[in-house]
Image (cartoon, rainbow, N blue to C red):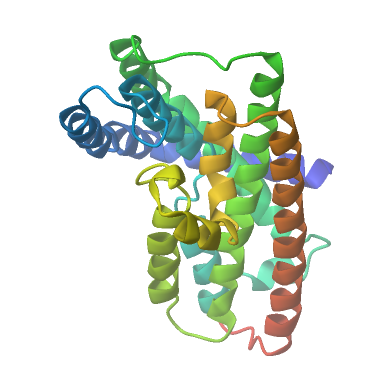
Length: 264
């Protein structure tokens, strides 16, 4: 574990070079949020929508933005694809190091630096909307939220990692990444809560791992699911993480057999 801790620290040092870029992303990332909040304020009258009051809906987007800051993959998938395409992975194949562990350490470092860079803009946003913000209903939901967010970040990374490994077979993975991003934006509850979908559509989306990278943690925070549903959801998260890890290892083993080791 010591070598991965060293990589984590190295990742922090490297990522700090781009701290202004992260700050800009955080600030400009609030513009779509502001537009969405104004839209919902215009839509709401007196009655709740799908069980969400206006306060609930605004709080949903605030917590969703926080979860996204903690778990989203920024450039990791592009970097992985570049490592494979340009042969940068060669030097790692010669070392007693697991590439998945290496990239996961850099991902964790990047999330930490991004959160530090985005802390001030997020704080200003939460303070300005403090009338809508609320804490989890109890200690159980607070602890479950932290666990679910950590697992959501791991699942998010593994999904992107699997997609990036397609670089073993195709020269450019951008199309696949954009398709994944588009579907994830819809299925994760990033656009709006999944409760607003018709039941049949929601059931289809919930059969994918994407609701567990955003909608599920936010639902825990808002207290919209009980203890039994929380345990079931965390178990499903764990199952998806196990499946994604197995798939990632399988793709890596298959890809490395045909890897030409050019460049690097």
